[in-house]
Image (tube, rainbow, N blue to C red; front, side, top):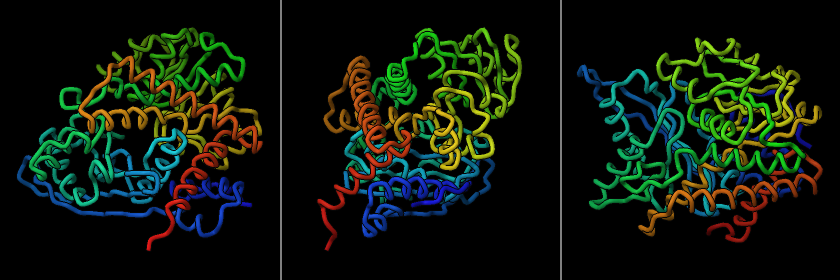
Length: 419
């Protein structure tokens, strides 16, 4: 059996999580060799002319983990600390996320090592168009479909679509998802990750005999996913007592007014300083006595060193890889019900799939239709993972991995090895 040790390398964590489930499935060494590593990687360096006339060389990546169930799918991240191992891990997690939701995709991820906050809008556009050109040899509607991620947004997706369309000589709307609505985006995409997580929490609450409208919630990370989760849960009657961003957090035991907190953040650049709450650290937030903890920031938030402090009944992972395998065992032993990222934040890729389908067909759905289909996919995925957890007598992450890995392994086996 795989020994669970603490590791802060994201690819090592992704492989460790894979190994635990592969052991449980008694997966053959041949299949392990195929599924444990990415299938394709493209690393590029490219020059971009800055507004002041200076030319800076940037580094970018695109990793495709597995193509056995269909074209690959995954976001593009602009972040100064992005590494190739980060990208590999995120691509691998995307494979399992798509398989858990039973979407006809493999996983991919890409990005540029850059802090977009330090660039002007025109510099970001030039960087994006050059990166898209470098990536044009591996992306395409039938090959690999990018989407927004940390540091990117619908406008950046629009520039990628336009760049590839200029190369092709005609508009290619299905080349990316997460686009603005007026050029082929989908209703419901902006809120999809958070809405999927809330649908999941609703099912988990029923399973655990909890009343969703009485839940006390803490949210780490107050970007799109964290803010939207908080707002949606507040609208359902839950009490969000704490939120945080990279600079610190807030606590109000009577409940925060989420829109007011966001208005403060937009005005000041941070949640700290909001008058109707006490200030706390991110470490404090993780140890609060709440029903639901939503880590929706970056990876590695809950580790073996702080998992003992978690007092939440449910941990719902809005971020990718916020809990290490060693922390998983601690949380499981404490009786914490973890909704793993490959299940909990699958709403985004699910609605991206819907957008891709709409783009290919040039037939678009209403937001009500999108949300209804999202709920159907997420609810089915939850119950499939819960059944696997009960069958194997393991926590929800390992159950999600066994379900996903089995589906991908069966696809690889059915297709066979070429030539």
